[in-house]
Image 1 (cartoon, one colour):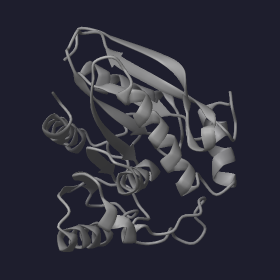
Image 2 (cartoon, rainbow, N blue to C red):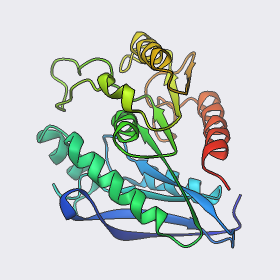
Image 3 (cartoon, helix red, strand yellow):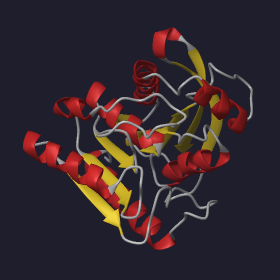
Length: 248
């Protein structure tokens, strides 16, 4: 754990050269080099709980950066209002997401004491987007926390317009860690098993874990869905995974 960290709002160049808001946290220690993580927020948006996750990575020795994926739709708006606006427009387009993550990764690689290694992690819709980014960009490690609509389209009436992206699995650029709830309905255990099968057939390194008694959003400490045992084990697996592929 780091003795201290510095966190602040910055601007990064995202898709199409757009300047967007982002939240950066870096350890205060004088490590000669460190890995970095792009944090992709969940569908509720660029909120205080996800900023806390960014700081958590910094406290554990990684520089972390979260782009505000809804900034174009509602600059300066509250996370709830910005998320509502983004959902009304069908969500974040896949190509824009990839461009924004690419800009965030470039920003992290340019930081002092960066070792050049960048991972990505996402929750909920961000889990799908983490997989998308890892199949579209040259990254070093990716974590998908209960990302849906990778294998199957969203259910009828869903507030976003998404298409399955399992066909991109052949382009996965890095090892993938997947953390899922066995009681989740989006994605279902069957969808998770199908994705794992595809990755096995392609020879793509991955490890998936499904937690009994946990559903969607089991990492979210401010929600009834929070499952401490699953979340604590999940965090340990994240530290082990990033320690293997990003640290040093």
